[in-house]
Length: 347
Image (cartoon, rainbow, N blue to C red; front, side, top):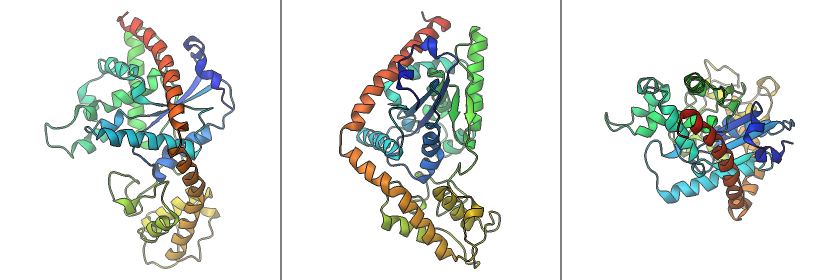
């Protein structure tokens, strides 16, 4: 297992060690897109046995307000629900340093420093900014949306992470992050911040909406029937699968170009069952058969997660974990920030 002692090691000893870092927004209860995009790959990484590997997972609650403020009670509840969900799914606090982003204010300070190395024009060219800024009237775009990639880079660089597990859709942000690390090194003639490497699992990286297979599964669009959340009951799962978009072209075939909706359901079944498309005996299935098999597999996968989640939400274990890890994460960040401040000239 990955040693818990890793996180009590001094910063100087961590130099050139392998550190995995990932962040997940506190949207409350995760859906299957979150599970396969972030949580499941992270659990696989936890199986690495090297003592020199550190794993840090942040619930990025400051990112949650990049599009504007949320109700305080909703943000608190969503953050706790996400923490409970991560542990329920298999994130092991003995192997992963799980913490709230806002508990480490040094991250925001580093974000400001990185902002001095970046231009607004480059940030405004990022696809995520272009897409989300269209929802606002001209002149009313939140500053947080523009500077989101700076905070994202600070999340990773604050802990001098070497590897970042993300989806392919984050490649441009990773390029920007690497560029910032390089610019910092070149500007201040230092190698203190490593250039992190993107780690993308090629299979099942993006789970699509049940109602619109051209879009990824999301809480921000498509409605409740477009996604399956980890707490959905058996009845809800079967209903959502039953109403998922498909077609009436007869027996099932896997044809992502011409039968995109059916291919989407097969891709999801492949992810849930951990079988390749070739291993699924769907040749004589109807679309109803496919939806029934999919619902059954999802329910079996989520049943133990639902049970674990209920226990965590009703207890105090998660609050103890977050409190302990706040101190560990803050200590690491403070020691790093002390060195960064010296490099920049603040000390």
